Amino acid sequence: MYKKGIKSALPIVLGYLPIGIAYGLIAVNSGMNILETVLMSLFVYAGSAQFIAAGMISTGATPLSIISTVFMVNLRHLLYSASLSTYFKAIHRRFIPVLSFFITDESYGVSITELENGQRPEPGYFFGLFITAYAGWVASSLIGALCGTRLGNSANMGLDFTLPAMYIALIMMQLKGWRKAAIAVFSGLLSLALMFVIPGNGNVIISAIAGAGLGVMLNRWTKVSL
Amino acid sequence: MDKGFIITVIGMLIVTYIPRMLPAVGLSRLKLPDWLLEFLDYIPVAVLAALLLPSIVVQNGHIALSLSNHYLIAAIPAFIAAIFKRNLFIPVIVGLAAYILLGIF
Image 1 (cartoon, rainbow over the protein chains, first blue to last red):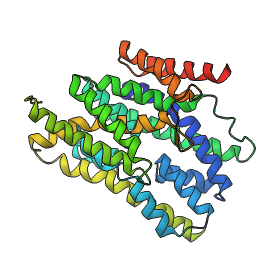
Image 2: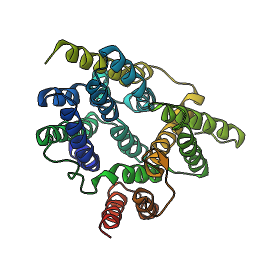
Image 3: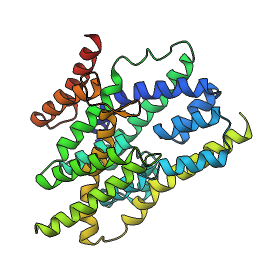
């Protein structure tokens, strides 16, 4: 089961590579040293929040303002955690607080999609997937930090399209029936519209909640149950 | 490493970990009502679409519906591949190949 998890994490690692390197470069250029850059990846493990924190550190923001911004940006993990909780019922309770640390947009997206497509919720699968993705993130931020100012943005190599392509694959694997397709279109468009109005990742949280709420109502209106 | 940085990272750890952990630990103990299960069943597609669309349509802070937006153009073959192959690897490889080719030509 570890093996299945590790294999499933490979697209995530590929996608983290350019983003982690970019984070490492930006962090070092905003005045953090190599150790600090990697410690943040080890302890926080949240890409967009780390970018924002590095930027705020370079402008001399206070710890309190950085922490409260990161809190807002990372609130969407509440939804992922709630969503995975239905599958975590099947594993031993003591694993849940540990596994929760590794929930990201990508590790959530891949695991929930595979679980819905028949993957059994076993600790080995979760640890294989989550720790491989985590190692990929930490390693690529170390590479970025080591390269420092020498490399510029040429480390990209086109890999920055990996995560959007992965989201497309994950969405298509989830689409069963017209209701989910309709909700995907609704949430996507709402998120696009709201991103110009709401700072941080607020657009993602609000449009996901609105979309899922609308989905529940669609089920009622068109009389289906799960 | 100064004190301010250590406080910042510990604070970031706490405010990031708690939303990741609380629902998983709390809700996995409970028997959830049907409407909440249905709600949670829609969350993955809703959230993934909410992440995807801005990432391929918006470039440099503006909506870019044009041929020069390589994210948008490369999304088309990735999407077509995903229709035929419902797995993770093939659409990612097809999308990446298309994106890299667009960068070359």
